[in-house]
Length: 97
Image (cartoon, rainbow, N blue to C red; front, top):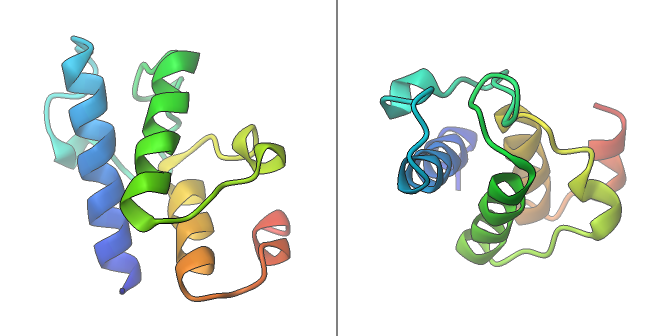
């Protein structure tokens, strides 16, 4: 799976999750950028973020360890983590970004 495919799928998940909760900050997938913060830029609350990351785990069949959940605050960080996980790179690479 390419980085662009991962990014697109994560953006779709974020959009669907935030739209289902009546979020007004995100009117379309094009509003979701790699540097978008889930909370600040996209208006997600802490429960939304947990739900988004759970859906990402399910979609990509990966487990994000609890120690990393608080470190994933932007769409780009989620893409980086999943890209590393699906390409079998060590998780420690994510820590340095």
